[in-house]
Image (tube, rainbow, N blue to C red; front, side, top):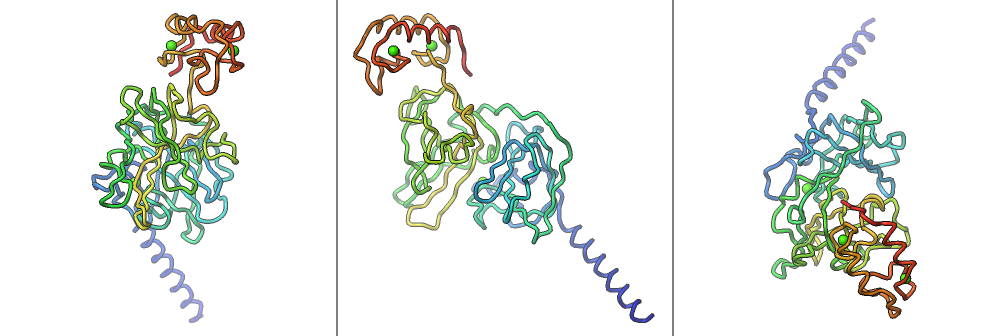
Length: 333
Ligand SMILES: [Ca+2]
Ligand SMILES: [Ca+2]
Ligand SMILES: [Ca+2]
């Protein structure tokens, strides 16, 4: 009898302790975890265990550590996205795009533990992490349109031996699905990855205004390639959409702190066939360019007669006219 009383006390004590521990874990929205006024952009919950009221799963990536990207549409203009990463295994296999997922007992890391500057909720059975699918089939968001200058490329600083952004104003778009419009591919082979897999997207009006992108998380990328196959210097894109990720690594001989737009599918890279004057519409302005090259049979890579040899067979003829006609009055946003 005495023994069972002792066990009872231990059980009650353990239950109280568990409740105290649970009470210490704050329950926060994505916005509350992400929003910060820290000049470095770091979450004020960096290094703490939290519960998260969560958001809609807008992307799932299962190479390496499995990750899901969550989005809370109440904050479509910033601080509305977060990355969740599994330390072990594939706990999110049953999770689908459009599910609203909330989480318990996940660690917020931004400056430690392979989070590399990108606010991440780490999930593992050793933390007693768990998640709940609160609803299904929520509509996936349209990307939030931003300017290149909202997410600017880093600049090499010889004094600090590294690539740095001028400020962390892009932080509010971290893990959000965003879109830049009317850009040209500038340089390739940029960034920390080995081999490098970043490319710059430049303003056509001023190529010195640029941001960085990468296709490493793109589900349609050929695994043998480091970029989507259409990416090449000079390519004009009507828009590029993707999830913004910060990458910080200040420990090596070259230091890095940058934001990169991670495309998720081939549909994130929008071009307009038949558009010759790069306004993403196909109309008489393009026909005027086209007519100038009619029957030109000296078309070569990469120029292809100012782009009018759409079929890339060396001559501008009926086959190219058919492609122009097929796209007549198309507009790509
Ligand atoms: Ca960050
Ligand atoms: Ca046009
Ligand atoms: Ca042709």
